[in-house]
Amino acid sequence: MLKWQKIQTGTPSGRFGHTCVVIENYLVLFGGINERGDRHSDTWLGQVSLHENLGISLSWQLLDVGSTSPPPRGAHAASCISSRKMVIHGGIGLNGVRLDDTWIIELSENRCYGTWRKIVSHPSPPARSGHSLTCISETQTILFGGRGLGYEVLNDIWVLHVTEGYSKWVQIFYELQNIPAGVSLPRVGHSATSIIGGRLLIHGGEDSLRHRKDDFWVLDISHISLEKMHPTRLNSKGMLTNKWRRLKPEGYKPGCRSFHRACVDDSGRYLYVFGGMVDGLLQPAEPVGLRFDG
Image (cartoon, rainbow, N blue to C red; front, side, top):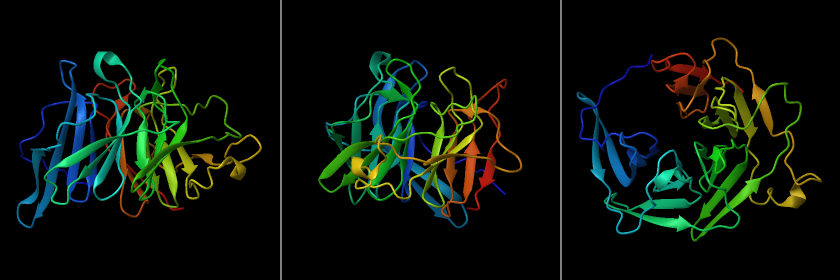
């Protein structure tokens, strides 16, 4: 059973297109767009506490980040990359311009302040919005899809490798085999989650014709590393083979949707999908859950 609890707390101003990631018992929120279309560049830290009698409480504070922070934006992507760091990439900045920059914030040990720094890597992912960033290891984050600078919908894969004093983007080239007729992998507004078996699960989103999707794609990321990205490890065309496959879940399946949210539990077996934009409906889509056994 799923039970919702409304948390009474002072919160950041109303917005959409922001990001919010979990780092230990904290939520780290960045950016977004308000009802007037203004872009934000503020960073908020929310502390989650569990009380035996009172339930869950959440207290927000505007995080002190000094004089350096990413430019304002919305529709960007974010992911935690360690117990103290969060990475963001891209989004829609001022004047509707799509961005291609990458930033990492590191929280202080006492969580009283944070330090933003810009990651410079060549090559790096082109400008985009509506894409996904997913943590796949303590040092790696994977980027997929989004809408590009020319409004094209993308299906490229990039891995950001971050260690102490070293950060680098690497593009993963692949080839799709035996794709069913009428199926399109490029998409924007999808969800991307890491599930059991070292795999990345892509669900829903929109294709280049703005058609919403209800399909599930699994990318095998269990053996991706900087060494295996070297061209000598790939096929003659420099591509990974047989890495994507389309998943066909049994039982009830969520309807077509885009710009929804999804997450998995600690086991990596249970996926929870909530909300999104749904064809023919004005009200939010219902929450659903899926289980993966292999």
